[in-house]
Image (cartoon, rainbow, N blue to C red; front, side, top):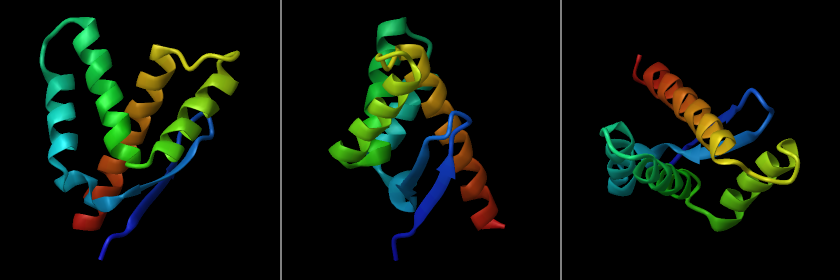
Length: 101
């Protein structure tokens, strides 16, 4: 049964991510790309891929970008996307670890 992992970033973005995301090859590939040493453009592309896989819904993904743009004076900057995505990943990891214990 698929469950949702719920959380909220420091800026207040509330999210729900399917817990089966950890088993998605695209998720693992994007994580691997982020962890590899590469140029900034590779990292930006991997972050974009990660956001797409995390939300797995174009509407939810756009809501994420719109929230960041509203907080960022009309633009969802690369830095804001990377920071918020990192926060979401940390929350997912913590909740996944709690579920295993």
